[in-house]
Amino acid sequence: HLRVAVGNLAHQVLAEESEPLDVDASAAEGFDRAEQLVNRLIEATGIGRDKVIGVGLGVPGPIDVSSGTLGSTSILPGWSGINPAEELSGRLGVPVHVDNDANLGALGELVWGSGRGVKDLAYIKVASGVGAGLVIDGRVYRGPGGTAGEIGHITLDESGPVCRCGNRGCLETFTAARYVLPLLQPGHGPDLTMERVVQLAREGDPGCRRVIADVGRHIGSGIANLCNLLNPSRVVLGGDLAEAGELVLTPIRDSVSRYAIPSAARQLSLAQGALGGRAEVLGALALVLSEMGDSTLLESALPTAAPASRLAFT
Ligand SMILES: [Zn+2]
Image (tube, rainbow, N blue to C red):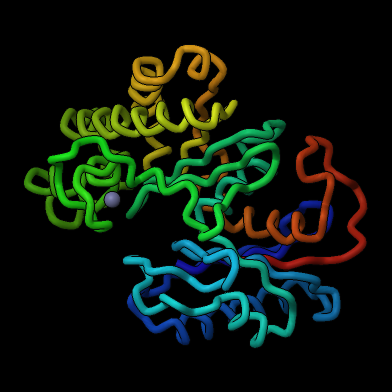
């Protein structure tokens, strides 16, 4: 999907819209659609183009920090090697800042959601893959190649299923939708989605509950490793799976307390994402604000003035 939001310096979202996007479509078509939707929303808010001071762009893949190009991704195969910020900036005529979706989810929850008031946070997104956005001392940590936070490829079982990364038994092979859905499809049909699994689990379906609990235990193992390495004060769970609430959070907590160093586990609070599918687009707004050196980003009190308008989208 493609989601665009327009926001201002007062951290208010002025307009927001999303539409489905075929991920197999060419990158050029994706940029065409993004450009159109951005222009339409700017027009709808009545903001002059000269007031737009930046665009934040999110993509579901690692961005090389030095070159700004998108690394290889099985989610957007036609986009590999493209410089998304350069491409979009050329079309819109404004500076564009780009990051991957997990980092933006972390920023969104940090500024507007379950991470408010926290400086050391990990945002875990479980969807078609599993990724983490890491905030250390108030800043997103990306690593030189932009691949920090690839928690989905922590090895859980050396002889487990082969992962799309080429290794065996990665966390992702026990938790991502593409591996989990086939377990339930024999009983629930081929069109099953994670959203539907979560809904069925909430209605009491025992198979869906069992699978979600198993996924939670595995994610908890990954989070335990993360806690031992980085000692975050909060982990926020995003993606469709987060909507399962305690059905997934309780098994995660059990695993964290079992596998993490007790002192790291004791300090950790685990929370469901507050922003749902909007975490990334709001993170894109936050990215522009942080690139502009907005010192209010980590404070709970919001500024009241709105001296200019800004724009961001994922
Ligand atoms: Zn892997």
